[in-house]
Image (cartoon, rainbow, N blue to C red):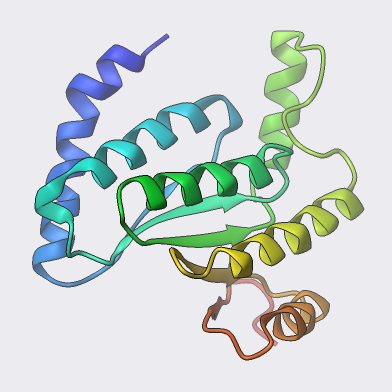
Length: 176
Protein backbone atom coordinates (compact mmCIF):
# COMPACT_ATOMS: atom_id res chain seq x y z
CA UNK A 1 0.00 0.00 0.00
CA UNK A 2 2.95 2.34 0.54
CA UNK A 3 5.04 1.51 -2.54
CA UNK A 4 4.66 4.95 -4.10
CA UNK A 5 5.59 6.72 -0.86
CA UNK A 6 8.56 4.42 -0.23
CA UNK A 7 9.91 4.89 -3.73
CA UNK A 8 9.45 8.66 -3.74
CA UNK A 9 10.59 9.40 -0.18
CA UNK A 10 12.68 6.51 1.16
CA UNK A 11 14.53 5.44 -1.99
CA UNK A 12 16.28 8.83 -2.46
CA UNK A 13 17.50 8.67 1.15
CA UNK A 14 18.76 5.10 0.74
CA UNK A 15 20.54 6.13 -2.48
CA UNK A 16 22.23 8.94 -0.54
CA UNK A 17 23.39 6.38 2.04
CA UNK A 18 24.62 4.08 -0.74
CA UNK A 19 26.65 6.91 -2.30
CA UNK A 20 28.08 7.81 1.10
CA UNK A 21 28.99 4.15 1.74
CA UNK A 22 30.61 3.99 -1.71
CA UNK A 23 32.59 7.18 -1.02
CA UNK A 24 34.03 5.54 2.10
CA UNK A 25 34.40 2.12 0.46
CA UNK A 26 32.19 0.40 2.97
CA UNK A 27 29.22 -1.94 2.84
CA UNK A 28 25.55 -1.16 3.19
CA UNK A 29 23.09 -3.98 3.82
CA UNK A 30 19.36 -3.66 3.27
CA UNK A 31 17.68 -5.88 5.84
CA UNK A 32 14.71 -7.75 4.35
CA UNK A 33 13.28 -8.49 7.79
CA UNK A 34 9.54 -8.48 7.53
CA UNK A 35 7.82 -10.75 5.03
CA UNK A 36 5.21 -8.13 4.18
CA UNK A 37 7.90 -5.62 3.20
CA UNK A 38 10.13 -8.02 1.24
CA UNK A 39 8.95 -6.77 -2.15
CA UNK A 40 9.73 -3.19 -1.15
CA UNK A 41 13.22 -4.17 -0.03
CA UNK A 42 13.77 -5.93 -3.34
CA UNK A 43 12.59 -2.86 -5.28
CA UNK A 44 15.05 -0.68 -3.40
CA UNK A 45 17.88 -3.15 -4.06
CA UNK A 46 17.03 -3.22 -7.76
CA UNK A 47 17.05 0.57 -8.01
CA UNK A 48 20.44 0.75 -6.31
CA UNK A 49 21.78 -1.89 -8.70
CA UNK A 50 20.55 0.14 -11.67
CA UNK A 51 22.35 3.28 -10.50
CA UNK A 52 25.27 3.62 -12.92
CA UNK A 53 27.11 6.00 -10.59
CA UNK A 54 27.44 3.09 -8.12
CA UNK A 55 28.72 0.60 -10.73
CA UNK A 56 32.21 0.24 -9.24
CA UNK A 57 31.01 -0.03 -5.64
CA UNK A 58 31.15 -3.58 -4.30
CA UNK A 59 29.43 -2.86 -0.97
CA UNK A 60 25.76 -3.36 -1.72
CA UNK A 61 24.22 -6.09 0.37
CA UNK A 62 20.98 -7.57 1.56
CA UNK A 63 20.10 -9.65 4.59
CA UNK A 64 17.93 -12.65 3.68
CA UNK A 65 15.86 -14.48 6.29
CA UNK A 66 15.98 -18.27 5.74
CA UNK A 67 12.84 -18.80 7.81
CA UNK A 68 10.87 -17.18 5.01
CA UNK A 69 9.86 -19.89 2.50
CA UNK A 70 10.54 -17.37 -0.28
CA UNK A 71 14.25 -17.16 0.64
CA UNK A 72 15.53 -19.49 -2.14
CA UNK A 73 13.50 -17.53 -4.69
CA UNK A 74 14.84 -14.26 -3.32
CA UNK A 75 18.38 -15.55 -3.84
CA UNK A 76 17.54 -16.67 -7.38
CA UNK A 77 16.08 -13.21 -8.11
CA UNK A 78 19.09 -11.42 -6.60
CA UNK A 79 21.42 -13.48 -8.76
CA UNK A 80 19.37 -12.64 -11.86
CA UNK A 81 19.48 -8.94 -10.94
CA UNK A 82 23.24 -9.10 -10.45
CA UNK A 83 23.67 -10.72 -13.85
CA UNK A 84 21.27 -8.34 -15.58
CA UNK A 85 23.01 -5.26 -14.20
CA UNK A 86 26.52 -6.78 -14.26
CA UNK A 87 26.91 -6.13 -10.54
CA UNK A 88 28.00 -7.99 -7.45
CA UNK A 89 26.01 -8.14 -4.25
CA UNK A 90 26.70 -9.33 -0.74
CA UNK A 91 24.10 -11.59 0.85
CA UNK A 92 24.01 -12.05 4.60
CA UNK A 93 22.02 -15.17 5.35
CA UNK A 94 20.32 -15.38 8.73
CA UNK A 95 17.85 -17.92 10.02
CA UNK A 96 15.43 -15.21 11.15
CA UNK A 97 14.98 -13.10 14.22
CA UNK A 98 11.36 -11.98 14.10
CA UNK A 99 9.51 -15.29 14.08
CA UNK A 100 7.10 -14.41 16.89
CA UNK A 101 6.17 -11.09 15.30
CA UNK A 102 5.60 -12.72 11.88
CA UNK A 103 3.35 -15.40 13.38
CA UNK A 104 1.38 -12.89 15.47
CA UNK A 105 0.92 -10.51 12.52
CA UNK A 106 -0.42 -13.37 10.36
CA UNK A 107 -2.83 -14.38 13.12
CA UNK A 108 -4.08 -10.83 13.66
CA UNK A 109 -4.60 -10.31 9.93
CA UNK A 110 -6.30 -13.69 9.56
CA UNK A 111 -3.93 -14.82 6.81
CA UNK A 112 -4.53 -18.31 5.42
CA UNK A 113 -0.89 -19.28 6.09
CA UNK A 114 2.18 -18.07 7.95
CA UNK A 115 4.89 -16.18 6.04
CA UNK A 116 7.60 -18.15 7.88
CA UNK A 117 8.33 -21.78 8.58
CA UNK A 118 6.62 -22.90 11.77
CA UNK A 119 9.14 -25.62 12.63
CA UNK A 120 12.79 -24.90 13.43
CA UNK A 121 13.90 -27.94 11.44
CA UNK A 122 12.38 -26.46 8.29
CA UNK A 123 14.26 -23.21 8.84
CA UNK A 124 17.50 -25.17 9.36
CA UNK A 125 16.97 -27.04 6.08
CA UNK A 126 16.13 -23.79 4.30
CA UNK A 127 19.29 -22.16 5.66
CA UNK A 128 21.51 -24.94 4.31
CA UNK A 129 19.68 -25.02 0.97
CA UNK A 130 20.13 -21.26 0.68
CA UNK A 131 23.82 -21.58 1.62
CA UNK A 132 24.31 -24.08 -1.20
CA UNK A 133 22.58 -21.72 -3.60
CA UNK A 134 24.80 -18.83 -2.49
CA UNK A 135 27.95 -20.82 -3.19
CA UNK A 136 26.49 -21.76 -6.57
CA UNK A 137 26.15 -18.06 -7.40
CA UNK A 138 29.56 -17.00 -6.09
CA UNK A 139 30.43 -15.31 -9.38
CA UNK A 140 28.02 -12.50 -8.50
CA UNK A 141 27.13 -13.01 -4.83
CA UNK A 142 29.50 -12.72 -1.87
CA UNK A 143 28.07 -15.05 0.80
CA UNK A 144 28.00 -14.06 4.45
CA UNK A 145 26.58 -16.35 7.12
CA UNK A 146 25.28 -14.99 10.40
CA UNK A 147 24.94 -17.78 12.91
CA UNK A 148 26.10 -18.83 16.33
CA UNK A 149 25.13 -22.47 15.79
CA UNK A 150 28.22 -24.72 15.75
CA UNK A 151 26.56 -27.38 13.58
CA UNK A 152 25.55 -24.76 11.02
CA UNK A 153 29.06 -23.30 10.99
CA UNK A 154 30.56 -26.75 10.41
CA UNK A 155 28.07 -27.47 7.63
CA UNK A 156 28.86 -24.16 5.90
CA UNK A 157 32.55 -24.97 6.09
CA UNK A 158 31.90 -28.34 4.41
CA UNK A 159 29.71 -26.82 1.70
CA UNK A 160 32.21 -24.03 0.99
CA UNK A 161 34.97 -26.40 -0.16
CA UNK A 162 37.50 -23.60 0.03
CA UNK A 163 35.22 -20.95 -1.46
CA UNK A 164 35.34 -17.36 -0.28
CA UNK A 165 32.76 -16.37 2.34
CA UNK A 166 32.54 -15.00 5.85
CA UNK A 167 30.92 -15.96 9.11
CA UNK A 168 29.31 -13.28 11.21
CA UNK A 169 28.41 -13.90 14.82
CA UNK A 170 25.12 -12.39 15.83
CA UNK A 171 25.58 -9.69 18.46
CA UNK A 172 24.97 -11.05 21.93
CA UNK A 173 24.39 -14.61 20.72
CA UNK A 174 26.67 -17.58 21.35
CA UNK A 175 29.30 -15.51 23.11
CA UNK A 176 30.74 -18.65 24.73
